[in-house]
Image (cartoon, rainbow, N blue to C red; front, side):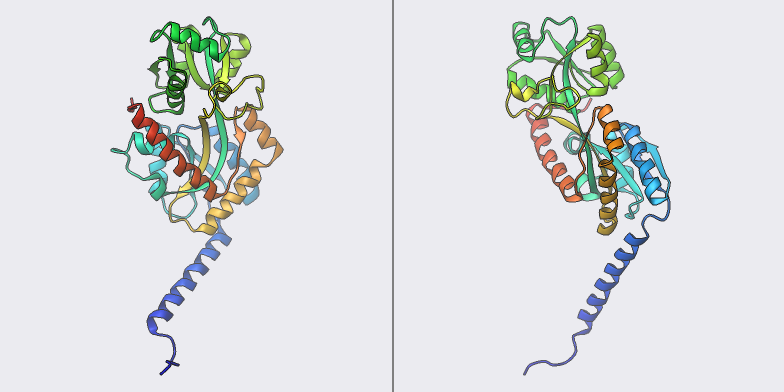
Length: 324
């Protein structure tokens, strides 16, 4: 006989709980934000967080506090967000080092990037310029490769640390070109640039703000850019990929918050950030800083992170790279 009675108690309790959860999320998103937001900044330019924070404050009438935590290759910053309440008020300014850290610091890292953090939006890409000291007898990437082959193991390249994107870019170039540039890691970009300008080291992949002012003075030569396409602010500089097809290494900045944050809150924050990234004055300021604006959905940012974790895991293991 067909049961025409009322649904069971368990079903009613589940339905009520689901409705309550959906209502709570909707109210949460509607009220968000109703207090200050905190941006946690690791090894990234705090100017980007401040630019975004100013616009968010203008639009939402809530202050944005920028909290600098640059230690330990971004591990401290990411961990503090991973352990924050899941309410959208603590936000990480993440970088391209975060997917690398998943493999490089796997044995000591206290959080999992995919499990414990929720992507909000990709903000910008940051290409690296292959630069050499002005006294090096090469003016193009093929000439540098020829020089490196004739002096195997005698040319050094510098980076701001083992396992950083410039380090991985240089090792990929070594493999693609069949050369043996020797790694000399430094702790900071200023220290790295100081010795590169002095000729203590000869080669580096460096971000535009650090490299291009010295290219203009002739102290450094820019041979190529690491992105798949030429950099809009310096279109005369070819890509590495024009010599070695498929070569691509870019830095990036993006926003992430604590896993478990209600999706309507994440979507609201992502929409606001993407709105800001389309402002002409913001785009101009970012390009002046060597960044290319690149807003995305949370889902697109998540896909990029997962893809890079897999890619850099293979590269780190292939080249036996360890943190310094």
